[in-house]
Image (tube, rainbow, N blue to C red; front, side):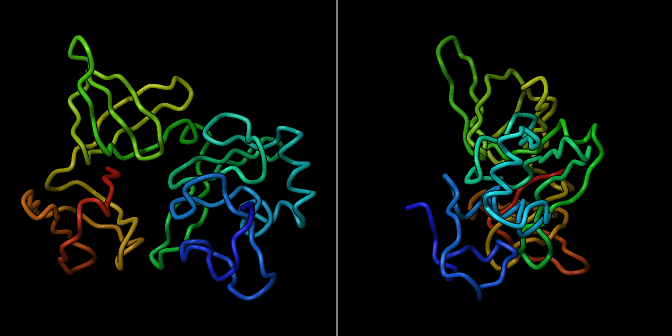
Length: 216
């Protein structure tokens, strides 16, 4: 199906639940991203209709993580970078404290980097290590990184620049669960329970490690 009913849309999408019956469905990962049509029409107000959005994409005016957008159903994922070529504007998809997607404008030099969570790693032949990332990328790397760490990826050079380890003192963002959108600092890790104690504002709460991502 190419559409969702308006009642089916994820709570992260910043659009009204009242209106037309159907909303465009992204090509994949409905929960963790948002389709380009919604971005151009509803969020950035660069198009008023689907036809206008398709024309902008056809003219190759939109880049997603440094490459040309394919169509209006292409999914923009958490921390992806959107470049508007004619306007020389650059945006990163982030989560507000209310758990809604929004675009944070960034400088051009920041648009070449993306932070991504490591969801698992594999040992290949000749002891090469493959890091599998939350947005579907994977890299062969000699860098000492573990599952649940994050990495900073150079989108231009397509390589990992550095590892952001899951450890005490690390800055994180919660991307799922009832505390979605909250940012804080790790104050302790319980490996057995797979939770981390996070200081958010002046309170400390326990968050499942699978629901958070290291960002610094």
